Amino acid sequence: MTASTGTDNVVLARPVRVRKVAIPAATVVFVVCGIAALMLRRTANGVLLTVSDQVAMAGIGAVLAGLILLTLRPRLRADEHGVEVRNAVLTRYYPWSEVRGISFPEGASCARLELPDDEYEPITAIQAFDGERAVLAMRELRKLRREIGQLE
Image 1 (spheres, rainbow, N blue to C red):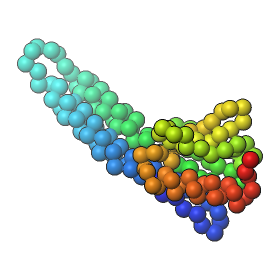
Image 2 (image 1 turned 135 degrees about the vertical axis):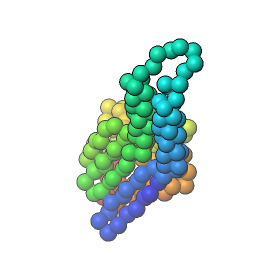
Image 3 (image 1 turned 135 degrees about the horizontal axis):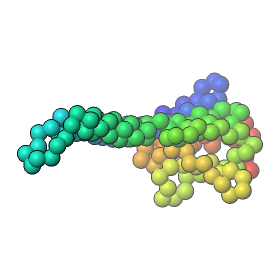
Image 4 (image 1 turned 90 degrees about the vertical axis):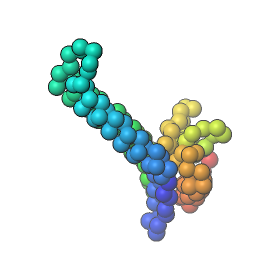
């Protein structure tokens, strides 16, 4: 997880340790499906497999690897105007006036933004898996929120 603040009061956070798991896992899945695609034609039990079956197997490997790599996409960007949360699929922007709190519940895998009407947005860019880096990112985010005067 990288967390940084500059003179422009911007906090950026991305998960770091998940890269050490996701990239090798996606590579292994893609390679295994590729090898399986090459080996599909060599069957001794009489099953008729065609080139389209091989292409489909390689395609399945590519899709699975892509899904695994979606875990690398999360990012948090906060400045004096609001918070942009990019999770695996969606990116949402919340002005500070809509943010009721920032929490990391005990036992949770990631932090979250507390929103009006008891709603929340998970911040998958700040993960418990990152340990001390997650703590640093939460401190920086809370510090920014205090500096711009958006506390309860």
